[in-house]
Image (cartoon, rainbow, N blue to C red; front, side):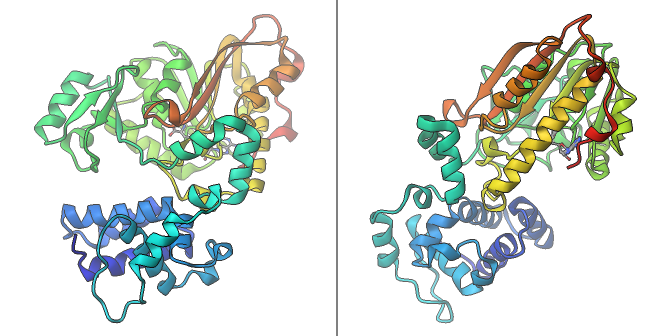
Length: 426
Ligand SMILES: C[S@@+](CC[C@H](N)C(=O)[O-])C[C@H]1O[C@@H](n2cnc3c(N)ncnc32)[C@H](O)[C@@H]1O
């Protein structure tokens, strides 16, 4: 495969943006495509694949390029020349010839391939930081090696059909007419899988609000909350609204759905998406302090807490998270999750239900949070069901959810009134 020089320049520049500028890979790709609207689909594919694969396997390709391992995440040591070498290691290990350029640093394919055959530590081979490997091993034990491997496989593209506007069969037909082949996902009634990776945001079907792009496992969360038309539902960590839109569809656009978040810019995006999806029961409200939650004590039939988490279950989709996370950041998130569960659970009315969900596979963010909550409030809450999805058990992302019932007539004063000093902050 021949690689046009202008494309290679952009690849090196963009890898610098990710590893030195600390920007997210998907944002860098989006920005580059906007600057090069004339690129054809082949150029776009080569560019996006190069970025994602180099980010996913960064530490491994850095090693294959013969660079000192301890410097692979040190911005001051990630020079354009080294970026070129890392990309060259990726290109060579994919069986491709390097472009002829006398100004480019010399990389001998034989050296790269020889290093690939030599031994390396499991963390280098799996291209993850040592601290993450240690944490995975500590928390997941024997299950970790298979998960570590599964988290490096590229993820499929899934869609959630917007049942307010069409059904799965009609959407398949519509996308087929636009040239995109899909298949129904057996275990998830709302999901379609795209047969060949493509960007769907330009399709007429997307613009008409007929679907959202959403992983199949993530589509299990909203139904798990058991929302019904006419209910009062709160999505307290709604972000851009992926699950809020799904909840609204399950409620058949009837009832009241309060979507909250600490970031107003995310709620602005949610409003846009709701309007495209034909949803009008959502009220988006910024959480400005503990009072926002306090006023809603015992007001909801259903509460979804899709809490901020490490994203360890979705590394296949966001591989750059492993280079941006740290042990300390995961500990901070664990403390925040516990505070959110403690404080926001008070919004559930007696007899109502709460779902605590993460896109993590770490027990410390998942079942242990729920167990700790129940050890404090077990008389008032009943654990109805837990949902575990791990990437190696199917083509889906890793997710966790627990549904808790707030028992009637067991409300302690502590659970009915949030204290001012327990306000969680991101
Ligand atoms: C996992 S994301 C939510 C994704 C969203 N539910 C969806 O399906 O698209 C977690 C969200 O929690 C928000 N968040 C962080 N701290 C929060 C807090 N203290 N209270 C409420 N939301 C918070 C983040 O801004 C982020 O949007």
